[in-house]
Structures are given as C-alpha cells and as structure tokens.
Image (cartoon, rainbow, N blue to C red; front, side, top):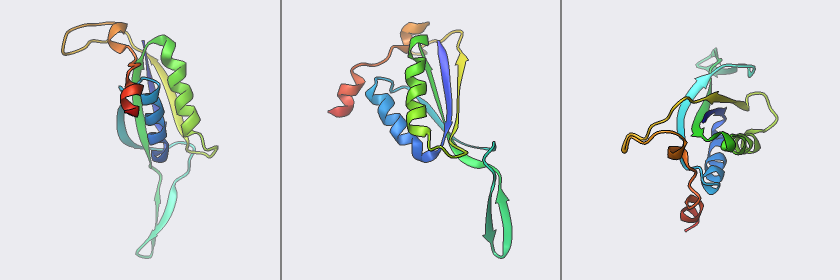
Length: 124
C-alpha cells in the first residue's frame, strides 16, 4: 500500500477530483494548506505599505491506494495540475505499513479496493 500526497493549486483540484472519481477512486482527503517553495512571494500594497506574502495557498490531496494504482493517481494529478509555471506543486509517494477499516476492523489492501461502480454512480 502507498499513500499519494499531492500539493496543487486550488484551480487544479476539481478536475483531479472528477477524474479520480470517474476512475473509481472516490476516497481522498483534502486539506487547504499554505507553504513556500521555489515560487516567490507575492508583494501587494495595502494602505500605502508593501506587504510580501511568502506562504502561497495550496490544496493537499491524500489518497491511500494499492501499489498497482499509484501510477494512475500520480498521472491524474500531473495531467491536471501542470501549468508549466513555478508553483504547480509536488507529489509524494509514501509507504503505508497497515490500514484498518474502523467500522468492521478489517485490515490490509482489501479495504482499499477501488470502486468500479463509482463511475456509474457519478454519471447517473
């Protein structure tokens, strides 16, 4: 099992979410975050003073999937997140040792199954 963690621009999130749902991966977590990287700060004028904001807003997407599904998730994020400009974001793939379903106590990769009928439900 792997956890895919992606930091993307806000405008890239909805196309990523839509395609993941169509591919049968509806189980994602998102967090609105701020961070700094190679993208420089934005200098704005407020009441005559210049203010530089070095922390840029991003959306953090987290998804735990079976090893064989990692490339599908990464390709989807790269496809919709890439503008070619500095600040498009990053994708990280981390190992996951164990996973448990709280409701039933089940564990392992069987709790991560993709949802092939999710695409049918989304189009209905």
